[in-house]
Every structure is written in C-alpha cells, then in structure tokens.
Length: 334
Image (tube, rainbow, N blue to C red; front, side):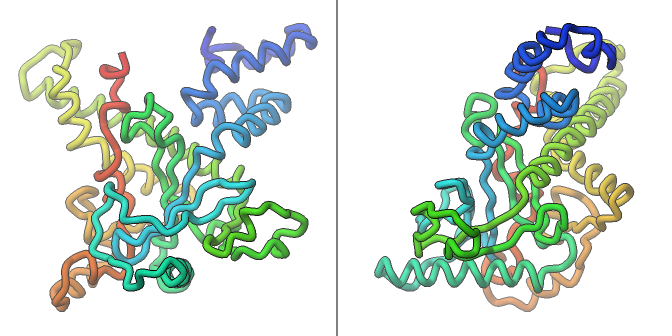
C-alpha cells in the first residue's frame, strides 16, 4: 500500500464514497499495531471517519498498553498507574523493580500496614511533585507499548513525560471514591489499596506521540550528521556504508540523548516551555544544569546519592536505563 503522505490530498474526494470506509479501515490496520505515532499524528487527520476510527482503536488497543510512573525522591518506591476496570489505578504494593535501583525498604511487614504506608507515600510524592518541584519537573514518566512494540524487545516501546500542569491534560489524583467520577460502579474503584488518577487521555496521547514523531525526525537528522562526520574522519566516500557496530556506537554517543535535547529546545521555542536539565544526568544530556545547587546537596549529604535526592530520576536517566538503541536503527530492523 502506498504511503498516505505520497498521495494527493484531494484523492479521497475522487473515490466512490461507499468505498472509503473499507479503504480507511485497511489503511489504519496497516499501521495501527506497528506504528502508533504515525497512526495518531497522520492517519487520524485524513478525515472525520479516520479520526473516529483511530480514536476508537486506540481506546481499545493502545490505552491498555499505556502506563504512567510517579517517582519519589529515590528510584524506589515507584508508583505505576495502569488501566484496570476502565480506570487508571495505581499498582498494588510490589517488591522493588529490578529495572530500577533501590535503597528504599518498607518499614512495616504486615500487609495492611504496608498498603497504608504505600498509599501515604504515593500521596506525599504526588503533592511534593506538584507543589514543590521546580518548573519542568512536575511530571510522570509515560511508557506506551512496553512488551509489545518491537516484538517485546526491551526499549522498543515509547518513553516520554507527562506534565502535571498541562492544562490540556487536566491530570489529577482522584482517590478511590466512585462519587468523584459520577456513576461508575467498577469494583476496581472501590479497592482501598489503590489510588485513581484522571486525565484527558486523547490530549495526553497526542502530546506523547507528536513528541515521538519529532524525536524520530531529530534522531534521523543527528544520525545522518554523525555518520557523515565519521566517514570524513575515516577518509571514506559519502555513500559508503557505515559498519553496524559503528552505527550503534554513534547512536548511543551522539543521538540517543541529544535528540531529546533538541526536542526540549524546540518545545521552548514553539511552546515557551523552559527545559529542565538535571545535574544528575549532565553526563547524558551534556547541558548546563538548570539548578546547579543540586550539587551542593550532594556535597553536604552523608548518605548515598539516591537517598539524598529530593526529586526522582530525570527522563535521560530513565532512557539510559530502559531504552535499547537497536529498535531505532533501520539496519537492525531489516
């Protein structure tokens, strides 16, 4: 099937109207399960039919594959929110995630005490992030398609951030009382061991996937420049292939994090959102820290670098821990 971007904009008006729904459904199915950013940002806008169809399929298929993580001061405890019974509910008390470092240990052994402590820590973390975090750090970490995209390969999923204060998303911690939501009687909502968050999922999905498309564009540009620079340094022709091991090295060193820096700069220019660059992840983003005073906190602390942190990990640290570079390279896709 031809790429929709290569088709004339008025081609849809020239086709028989009774054929369009079947054509649109086939077009959406061709990309829905393998390329959600392209499906949402491009195919969704072809017509009113594709808009409704894409939003319906995303609600059915991709929304259950979205998870949101609220980090406390250290890597653990973390608070993951996933779709259950029609609501985004916090996960129940879990042992520390092996993906993330941890120096936090629950003080209580009984299940009831652990649940109460977990929920109170979650509410405190939400309040601290919302009220005390610096601009640019009032965020949740979003993951879409974990365990599904790139055939379940670690890092094949989409990672980004959701801003607490984004007025379009209207995110809030809403407790477990069904009266907050009106008529919903889902049994999951009455689970006193979990918390509920509400947000406008279409607006949040739109922001996450638009940024993913921009990351692709910036990544391709940076990667082309890095390969051209490498060929020049090696005295090779401009059309000569770059070895796979060199491609991977170039992506890690010059593309993986720098494309997110480029996205942050673009959001600053277009949306007026001042980027936040953490002292802790300076070795990854290679930008001057937004808050140099963070270093002073480390010098004055008698504890480890995890315990003394007043904020959770920056997105660059999450990406460095979880994102595999292999799915981003066309060479490995082939």
